[in-house]
Image 1 (tube, rainbow, N blue to C red):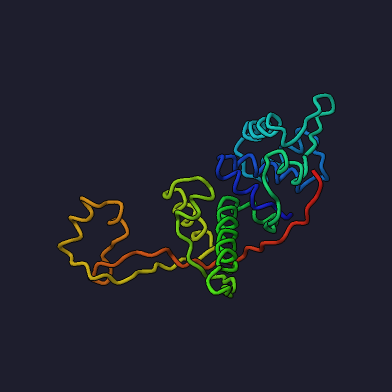
Image 2: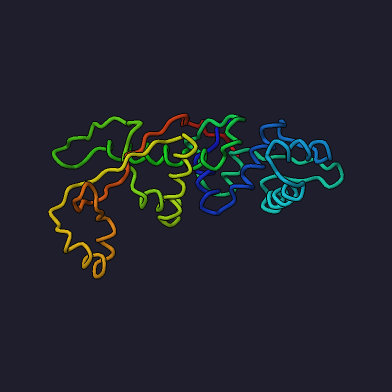
Length: 238
């Protein structure tokens, strides 16, 4: 599957990751139609590691109520709407997607986090390469697998707080999708000034840390992504 990045970002921002997971499962096991019966529900719960059928029906009810799928109460058939129609309904674009395999269900949340991180790095690098007005020159940087991505940049995209973004990065790193390397910048600040800064200028001082027995400014981590394949999505009518 080629999942729109914007759909992943929407699910993270609106905290509907579990519902997205079931929606993707239903798309993966049927050609648009899924019959809700004891055998199929049991197989879904086993594959998705649900402890009870209640979790399945709870997420299914949400998908029906939000019209991500339609349900025929007579035949007990679900019709899973397309990515194009769903994104049109949510008023989000579908230009870029991420390739999703069945094995990615097992590390679903870290996969989503990493997909958004990888897309954000690409988007940030793309913006750097846009023509600048100075002397009519253009920046000619090339996208790199390794790049710096401040938490505030991703927080703004997902409309989440910085601590949540930090947890996302850690989960992606723990799952082996990304590697991070801390970056520091030397300062001439004496130890005796660090505590007063932390007390009276907390918004600025939170970036200063003691590293190698000196006060240094902590820069955005260098992030290297792996096992994530972003792919252009062809526009389709909703």
